Length: 263
Image 1 (cartoon, helix red, strand yellow):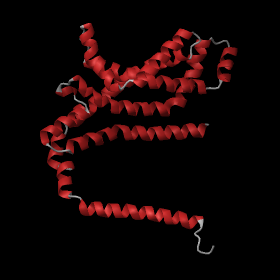
Image 2 (image 1 turned 45 degrees about the vertical axis):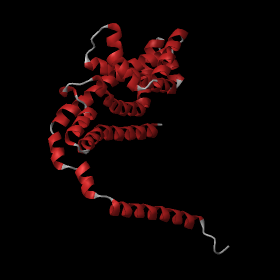
Image 3 (image 1 turned 120 degrees about the vertical axis):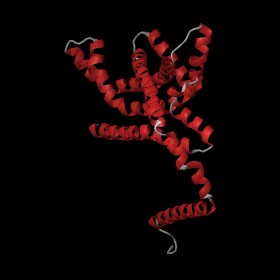
Image 4 (image 1 turned 90 degrees about the horizontal axis):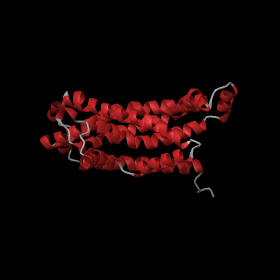
């Protein structure tokens, strides 16, 4: 009995073992890795300098623009779909359900191909690049946003609607003036997460065939990789994605903390 470890000792032993494994792995990596080759492949200063300022003024700006277009359209359509799914008219609920299930189950890649090549060929129409991007990102994003908004609306206590109706508001007026504003406060964190996802999905724009002035971060990094035979442009593109997504992630955490505090 005296030789048996206490729970605290076992916890300390397990934690110490984990740290030891980590230290050993780092040491082995430091000894085995070819740091000169890693520096040449990922941190080539000369190649990095060639990417600026175009990767910021063109690729980063276009990535933000494409994401904004897609999110704006997806938010508007998602709100309509959420209200349709909550409607007392069955055909509206059925249509919204079919749309949401379809676009949540279809890869965004397929939507880009359909709108970028399928629709123009099938209907013999020419669609502006920005419209293609807005529709491709927005149609997919709307399916997820709609479910988020629906859950937010249903999270608002029914007493809020009943109080509004008792003051003489119609059902639609109560929904617009009372319920939806409160629901958006609830869904802001997951909505920001959806914005982060759309930012990354904007990398699929390269499928549409872009002029140099229309490049986004992924396309810019890929072409620079082929030209320089170095992974440095890809690393820079990844860091610029983080410039967008890390502040959004921080915003999500702050909104979640504020929502939890309010509750």
